[in-house]
Length: 160
Ligand code: THU
Image (cartoon, rainbow, N blue to C red; front, top):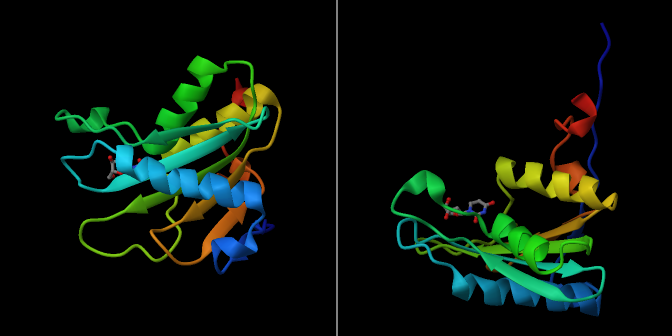
């Protein structure tokens, strides 16, 4: 028997002021994207903003549906916009945030498992790591160097 220890490095910023200006701008865009959320069923509003290698920022927000399983997460909405508008441009960093109707979210909001898988696929597609930045409505900010850090032992094309 042997054991494998997996470690993940997370950069933690106490406030956006500690981040560099470009990431601060991206996080601000993610907070703006919350305002575009269509979430009449959960009322949980998620905003994402991604930066392309060109420097351009695209936003996404969760888009819900009366047929609940069809709800689209903010992260995948943003990635879909990028794939549609700039299909050959790598995504270098994504910021995610959320707002709840029932409580102030004061810790980083974490992409769901399905979104993590899609983030990893995007990294693979462009052979480039995508940093992932997370914040709640307020509070500490987490930064991961790669989507792969969010999905250890992930399933990928190498198994096919
Ligand atoms: N949601 C996202 O947009 N991203 C995630 O990573 C987690 C969940 C959305 C889906 C749904 O509209 C609402 O949050 C509540 O689950």
